[in-house]
Image 1 (tube, rainbow, N blue to C red):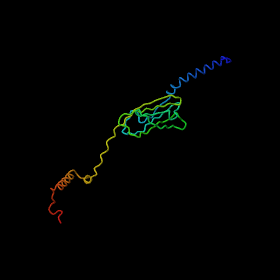
Image 2: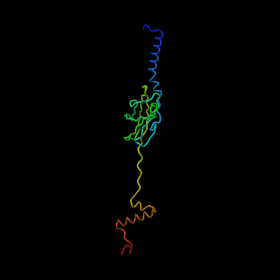
Image 3: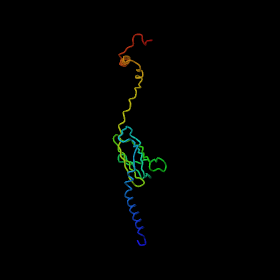
Length: 182
């Protein structure tokens, strides 16, 4: 390098060293600046609802931009979440969400979210939640005419009415003398 002063060589060397150091420090610094919060369903929770809305709020110092910068998996299967920015042009505060449309099976489920920020730092979060069996449906009220007629009667009155109809249909009941005759 003829014609350059010693000072120019020194400056060029310092710039090269700083650039090299910055390239090594970049990914680790990017990973350390990501937080995941407000996970839904809550980690460790259980519910009988088999079609939950899955979501997580992410804050990343450098920002998350573009559809290739994040992914979401439910039980190892990739789903396509929606990304929502807290405000226009702010790529540092985002929510990823996905509405389950096909009911999840009863049991434990694992959700994995991976992001790649603008500086190519990667961060992941995993949590589990459980889908329980739904409760049995309530027993419908008895709406037969007999059940409605029995409402408000004592136990003895219900017994006498049942006995009357049993004997009537069996043919062992006869009307008392003078009742029902012209």
